[in-house]
Length: 72
Image (cartoon, rainbow, N blue to C red; front, side, top):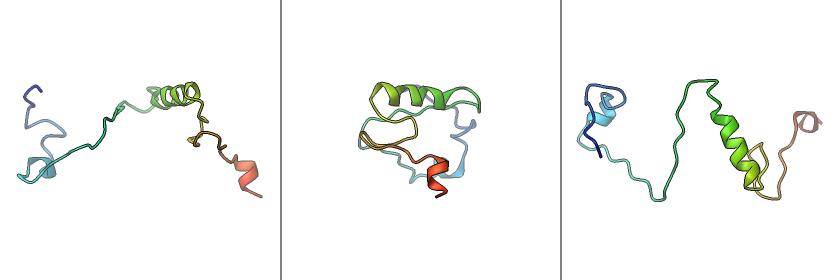
């Protein structure tokens, strides 16, 4: 991994600069970062649709409840 500038964000945050900072992921992850309006949600919805999941974040075989149904 390339050496990071310790004076730039997020490496300049006190929690990161401390000696006890350890960030370990038990499984592989993907992190999407972008400005509002950069279509990150659209990408996730497309991946969910291709995987057979609902766009609303439901589990396979489950459906998200629309606002009209949730209101009663």
